[in-house]
Length: 447
Image (cartoon, rainbow, N blue to C red):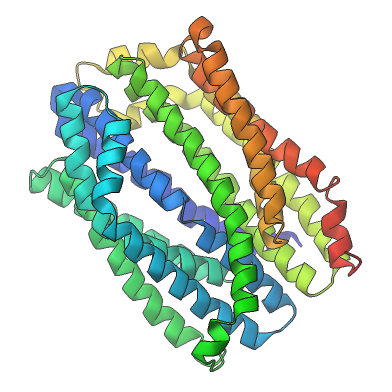
């Protein structure tokens, strides 16, 4: 079972790690572009990235909904059903991508105004970043569909390979356009456009070649079957609400940082959040394993393997959390210096500000260990309602703590609220599934 978990988890960890590394590289490039005023440029980039996180995370339901249903079809050896899931996910992703691109102006203007720092320089940078990167959105959503289907098919190698290629290409193009081509933050945005559209083309070619003998011929009427599409959108409707809450938390995390009126707080929070992101993408690899294997064992009605899988995924997630706690205790300054050019005049100030809040980054891996694997279990079991309800209540706790304590403890309130939000997500899902007994009963065919 450990081999099965690692077979899926390790490629996803490798591909996931390239995402925060891409964020780290973008932060470094932004710092280089900003010169002596790195805090301004890094702050503008963090807000721009937050806006696109809002778009992408609110469309990530396509990956989650596709993955769970495909994994169950794979476990039950229903070849036609997982073929239909591929086409349904592509159609939905394409439609959502076109809508998002068509609505770029109202989305962009509202987002930029909502996240405004009242600094004309920063707001101008954000605007240029947004209207360049928006061209990558349809491609990014299409990649969600492909990755969800491949995860359900128990294939983690293709998503890993394509993710590495996309993120390395993003870093290379961002450097080329921003530093060599002197495009500033627009260059980082353009790097994303080139990388993600290249990823879509490569993914289509690989899937068409590797799965040409396993994907059965289906008709458009079968793809658009009302009953099947209703189930797909029912699951995805819950995930959309869940994801909206998640994005709201991250958005208000950045907004609260910007509202502090201190560009150093904004920059430090953005950098420290990269620490959390590095950890989260590592643990998310085991969430992907839980997701793929839970769906597979439920589809195969194999409750014994399901129990072993869930138990070991939990062990792996907590082990990773303790490793990261140790790393952050011993080497957080070294990691921080990787994100900011040490030759810049304001780095000493940023380090001084970071020292006040680094305790949250050291503690948060333990608080966030459980929700990742629980998310994977619920996706694989298509228990989207539990995901939705647990996210709603944990998000409520975030806003209560943020605005209820901020007047007393300042920036610490942001990190307190975020830490409790992460902890409660996992706790709520565990008890809402009756300590996972509902999942086990489904694998036994009793629920």
